[in-house]
Image 1: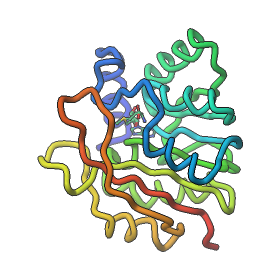
Image 2 (image 1 turned 180 degrees about the horizontal axis):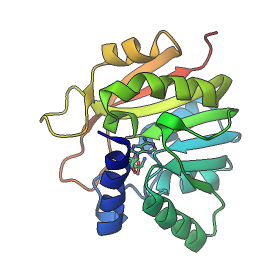
Image 3 (image 1 turned 180 degrees about the vertical axis):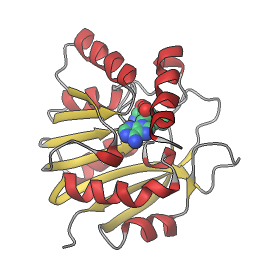
Length: 203
Ligand SMILES: C[S@@+](CC[C@H](N)C(=O)[O-])C[C@H]1O[C@@H](n2cnc3c(N)ncnc32)[C@H](O)[C@@H]1O
């Protein structure tokens, strides 16, 4: 996809549709992230919500006490998410940004990607991994949720096997865990997912 097409695809989607009817809309914090935050006893620090879309995940993280920056490639998604946070009285730094040529500064303790990596064109994956490496502080964690190879069908987004995650991220980040899971969604049947924890512990 060309640069402009990439933005316009998402922009049209967020302009034409209420976020509540989008398949990935989840008013609650992702259940795998909830369990992982509890297990790792994480209650504070800087979180980046990457490809934040409706903003529900960023808002839920801010409510839990994290300092949250949330970015999306679509300006309309960012605007709608800002309005949601305003209505709910929650402070989140929402910004338009393309992760592939990010303008963000580094130093995040945690990054949450619920459904962004798996929509990127394959040729952008290496740049994505480099951006994560740049943005995470040393010892920081990426919590990555993607479609699983176990999900039926061939339509978007891309599906991944745990070996794909190891192949793309393994040389650069420590793969702490990869779990078979599912996306809570507005669809009749929840898509099968991988939930991955990766640590920026390599040089
Ligand atoms: C499947 S949606 C998930 C939205 C949100 N994470 C959630 O769970 O509700 C994927 C999101 O990634 C955003 N996105 C796609 N490409 C991106 C890029 N290159 N940089 C930043 N965001 C991107 C889209 O606009 C969309 O909002």
